[in-house]
Length: 369
Image (tube, rainbow, N blue to C red; front, side, top):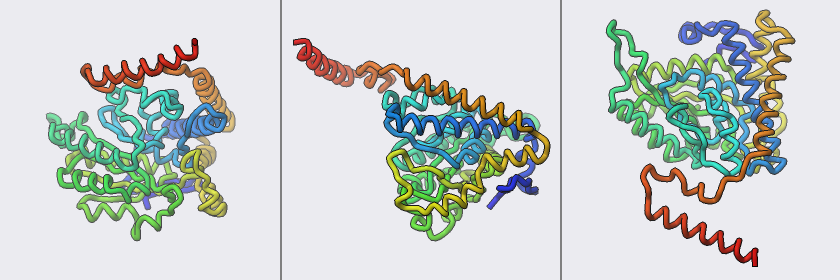
């Protein structure tokens, strides 16, 4: 398992991957720390708001901040990311306003952001389905000649593209994921399969999903697989940059298994105490992705307590702003569900809209009488 920063905050040299994070100086590492703290604080606030009835459901990412921030920061503007339903940290790194995520879980929006502008597709609820979507998109990049190019000096083109798709360990048991593996391999699609192995597919442990480590499955499809410490933001950043570079050069897909842990429930409808032991949770608390960066920064004199307090205050303000927005979020008009379904006008959809609005109007009239 590739690791560059231990749980104790010690830096480990890697001849293979150090060059991929040569630009990460103390200031950049502080930026990664800030990203993770803000994302975790927002996640905790959204979790609390669901308990207070402001959101219909929430999907926690607690414990997976390094995997998401590290891989998300590895992407270039021209790249495309396909999330499942837990990639709030990746959304943040792609410039999606965290407020845009709340509408999905309040059941007022499907997704509110411009996915082309952000290079971040809408969330996918159907387990594994986003892998097929990502495979098709990456095949399109290959067919349109957006990979494997060089500039005038023979160096790799800075405009080449790649795609990354996120899914969990449980999704690897879905047929859609395996079909995506097949198509991406056969067509050398520039696609990074990023599996966040958080040890639990809802209530089923990883050992019920596979006899072998998940990254080794890539071998059967003919492309490389690698396991990375998913709680190490530097390792996730370096390995994802390497994998994306492989894709942009036209070398085909790569599977990354980010070995991490879901510290909270699968969703707010789940009770993890029914299927996992508290001892297991305590072990993983010592591998916290944020704490190891904090220790590293403090030990090496790159940040003091005043700076850490400042970041925490910033995170609290970020969460307070989310709360204010969520509590005052306007209810959308009922006809909005029919908007932006097709690029061109649809007589059938227009008829459905008119019939539905007429049906709702009947309740209003009955109430008035």
